[in-house]
Each structure stands twice: as structure tokens, then as C-alpha cells.
Length: 232
View 1: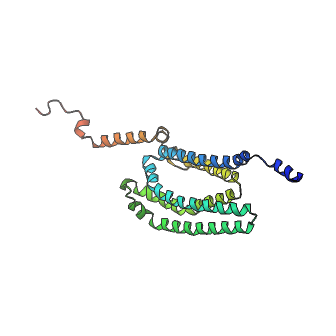
View 2: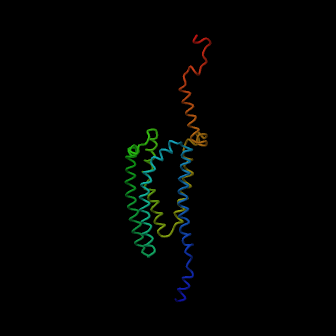
View 3: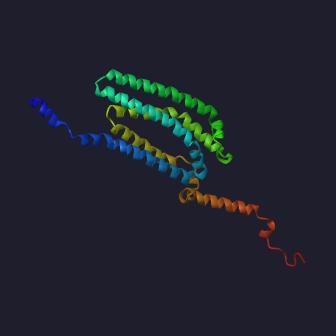
């Protein structure tokens, strides 16, 4: 073996270092997504109430189905882009990325249009309880209408990971997570109007409401002292 090739092989970084550089941001991204989902659910239940949390839970199967499709599409795109990038075929990388984004945008626009028109019938078809039907329909309408943004974000991160960049998606996810955690309690009006309810949890507001309902339903005769000799 020529000395030049031996020197090139000796300068190649260890395989575990390459794996660590690529996989560490990827694992942190997955952990950050799970953490954001958990904290968002906790904030939603504490600030808005259990009804809002139930409304979000009703829509979850629909969102999981749509994002599962996009995750499969992004995984395939990552493999094809990685193969083309490793072979030095830049035109193939552009072609795969463009085709993937085009398919995702067509699907996302169809989903957004469907959500704007049929979010309430969709929630009724999922047997949503009547007391949370309005909240679930509003949440589904917003989520389906903004689905193109989520699709583009996921596929853009897939393209970046296909070319070996896992740090940029991690930074973008960290920024979006920080913005979401700041805006979630800030934009809700009840945070400044009823601080005891959002601080102490949804059970406090529920107990107060039950006591008020019981007081209104109590007969007048039990709240006033009966005159002496009544009933004789």
C-alpha cells in the first residue's frame, strides 16, 4: 500500500466518533420533542383546564396518523438523499428533495382545506363528547390549517439529516420549543385574570364551581332561619 494511502487511512476519525457526532443531536431532538409534549400537556391542563386537555386528546389519533405518513415519507427521502450525497450526485439530491417537498405540500394543502371545512364533522365522527365538541373542533381546525408548516419543517430536517447535518434541526427544534413554552402561558387571558386557578391546578376551579352550583340549587328554606313555632 502506498504511503499516501496509509497516511489518509490513519487520519480517518474513529467510527464511534462519527456515530456520536451524527447520533447525539438526533437523540437529543427526540428527547426534546418528548419533553415538549409532556410540558405542553401539563401547561394545558393547569392553565386552561381538563376540558381543553380532553379536546386535544380527541384529536391526537388524527394528528398521529398524518404525521406517521409524513415521517415515513421523510425517512425514505433521508435514505435516498444520503445515498445520492455520498455518491456525489448533487442533482439527484435536489431532485429527491424537490419531489418530496412537492408531495408533502400537495398533501398538506389538501389536509388544511379539509380541516377548514370539515373539522367539526370529523370530531363528531370520532364520537367527541358534546361538552368539549366546540373546543375540539376549534383545535382541530387550527391544527389542520397549519399542517403545511409542520410538514415542511419535518421534511426540511429530513433533507438536512440526509446530507449529514443533524445539529441544525436540533437548534431549530430547540428554538421552536422555547418559543412554544414561553407563548403557551403568556397568550392565555385567564393567566392574569384568575391566577389561583392556573397556579393551583384545574381541580381548584372545579371545586369552586361545584360549591357555587350547590349553593344556587339549595332551597331557600334551608338558608333562612325558620320562625319560632313554625309548623305547630
